[in-house]
Image 1 (cartoon, rainbow, N blue to C red):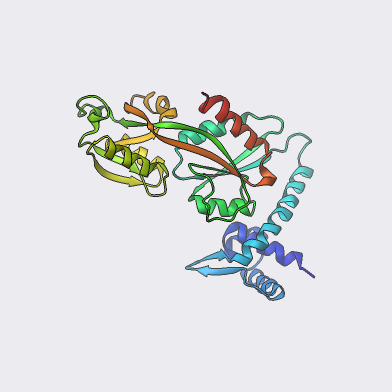
Image 2: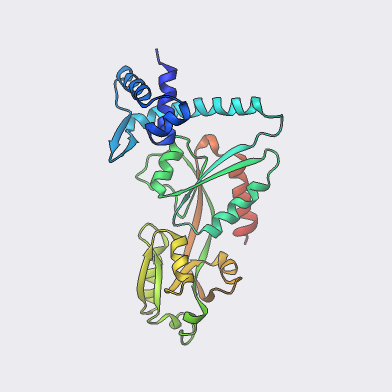
Length: 299
């Protein structure tokens, strides 16, 4: 028979990422937790963790076990919190994963309406990472939603629902000092200008480079960034012209730190909300879809 205490220790280690942190929350010693994990692996006949450097990572078998353990113990945590709270005061968790290539301004405008929900109120938890890792956590229900610039890659076998939130062109932005060096009309004004572009993880990168080539604009690529926020930080410092979705052009230029050099719809960027079937009707997911449809990407 499955030992639920051992399974609980396994869940805590998987949740915290290390035996040490799990012990701190369980108020137990490391030998106790390690011993119980070893017994659980022995009883199940499979390894649940593997050591990678100084860290523990779930094996494939461990991820399958976690997919069942996660909802069991999260339900227990939610039940305990509900019993301790007054009726109607307990917020509903909304765990969102954000692909690091998605601009933070877009993420904010998609998620901000969820914070105004009152029935039920939500408690948002956001985590930024590579899309593949976020989808792995979505598959085992450690996340309720993933916001990305691409749908689920075809090579990943994940049962999910993908909603296209919207699509827009891109704009080219620069500090006033750098913009003053641009000569002529767009896109010719980009000629020989230093350019910051998205890294290989971004879907829009190849479309951007192809458009520049077709427009016969010779730029100097001085930086490539997987993280859109980091690219924007370099752009705000005057390191080069940077690109961003046209729907946030007003957000970027409002403070006067950067200027819009020009926009093109020949290069488009799309954004998606990815969820598993059990979470597709989560109030937070519904609110994100409405924010995209009625606000950010309203036609």
